[in-house]
Image (tube, rainbow, N blue to C red; front, side):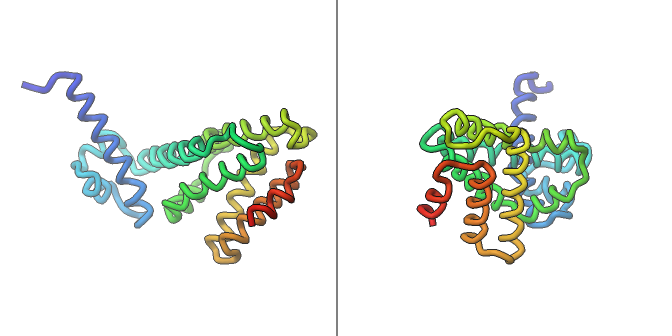
Length: 203
């Protein structure tokens, strides 16, 4: 007799969670690893992996969502509504980059994927929403200038964050130098009140 539908759904949920827990680690260690390697690390059969993710591309897209969720959770944990907006923005970015550093090789492979502009926006939406939240708070408090479009500022903040990570990962800048450059660039972009003072105080 087959198990009841509720148990099958619970088993399927656990299997999917195990696969998505294992896949980032496996693919970061070996970006070319196949679904068999992911199955072994997850403690499930290859057929189970295929049942949830019929192709390696679909698994990779799901991994992108999982890594993004982890980064968003790390950002939420730094209390974005607390303290000056400029400091909250830096805490947000530092938390996101710290989460991303768990899978440096995997994220480089993900960044190299060719996706449409709408898909790229969707991929960054959880992060972009949190950045926008802090920027709007800074504008309302008078900390940030309000002359530039918010969407443009959000996109520029994400790009600057990527640049800081790339310079550090390539060894062209130390981690501290990359963070200082990011902080100074962002505060100038946002015309943050007291931004330079905050930057110096955190060195």
